[in-house]
Every structure is written in structure tokens, then in C-alpha cells.
Length: 154
Image 1 (cartoon, rainbow, N blue to C red):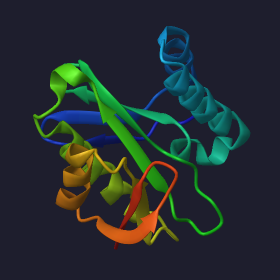
Image 2: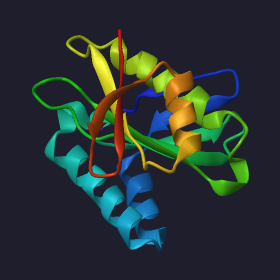
Image 3: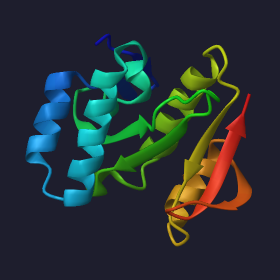
Image 4: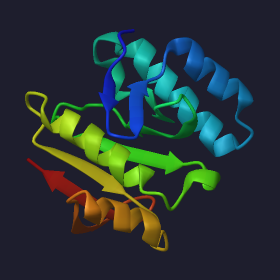
């Protein structure tokens, strides 16, 4: 599985290796997150040529400290990926989510056929909605499983 990397002035964002994803799954105590990480790994193994669209991407400070992670939820025939992200509690409120989402959305929109990226967030997750708006996402007016949907286009 080839590794994809994006850098910002403070962050290194990259696709986790199979071993890193396995270690994350083994260490995760939240059953919902454990299932999500396992689905990411399964997607990588089933679609090795598109692994970066299924993998967990690690968000690290330039010194290697992991501050969070993100993922795309696959790449379907419409080439309209959905992004999900989270920042570890100790590192929230420092702009890392905005910085990371901006970097990987720019990467995604640079790929052929990808004209937009979608996201979904819980209705009461104002911080996540603020990140999306700072990154140019607009509400679609639709509700998904988790809450309101957003989209950003080229």
C-alpha cells in the first residue's frame, strides 16, 4: 500500500500503513471507532489501487506527535468522496482540524474526476461545522445518518 502525504506549516498528514491501522484497531476501546477503523482497513485491502480513499490518515505535528486522524469514506463511481475527521481532545481548539481538512481536500480536488468532497456532521457539533465552513464547505440542505451534509467543489 503506497503512502500518500500532505504537509502544512505545522502538520504532516499521511495515510497510515496496514500495521499502523492494525495497531489502532487493537488499541481502540470505543466499539464504534473500532468498527470504523476496521472498515477502513478492509476497504484498503479490497481496493489496493484506491487505498488512500479508504485508509486512516494520521494527523501529526511535525515532531511526530499524533493529534488526530481523518479519512475518506471510499471513492465511488461518482468520484464524490466523503471526508471524516477527529482531533484528540488535548489538541482541539488550535486550528489543526481546519489545517488538515484544507490540505487533504486540496489534495482530493487535484485528482482527476474528483470535482467535489462531501462531509456530514452531528447537528450539535458546532466546532466541526465551523471547520467545514472555514474550509469552504457549504450546507447542501440534506440530512445524512449523522446530521447535516456539506459539500465543497473545485
